[in-house]
Length: 103
Ligand SMILES: [Zn+2]
Image: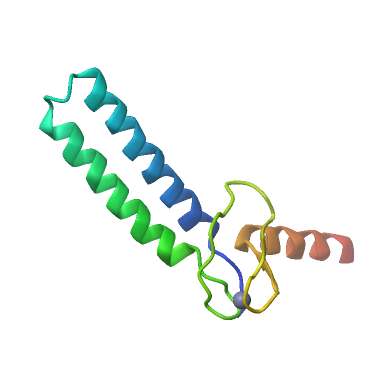
C-alpha cells in the first residue's frame, strides 16, 4: 500500500469551492433575492471544506496541511514529518514508465 495523496479528492474539493464562488456570483447578480443560490453556495462550501479536510492530510503521519494542487506532481513537504507528499497519479505514472523501460 503506497502512501500518496488522493488527486481525485483534491480536484473534487477544488471544484466544490469553485462552485460555491460561482453560485455566490449568481446570488450577487440576482440582487441577493434568490434563496436557492445562497443555499447552493453554502452547500458547496460545506462539502468542499469536508472534502478538503479529508484530502489534505499527510499520507505519512496524518498531519493536515494547506494547499494542494490540481496538476503539480506533489503538494510539497509535510510540516510535521518532513516527507514529500506525492499524489497517487504521479506515483502511478512513474510506475508505468518504469514498467515500460523494462520491456
Ligand atoms: Zn507528515
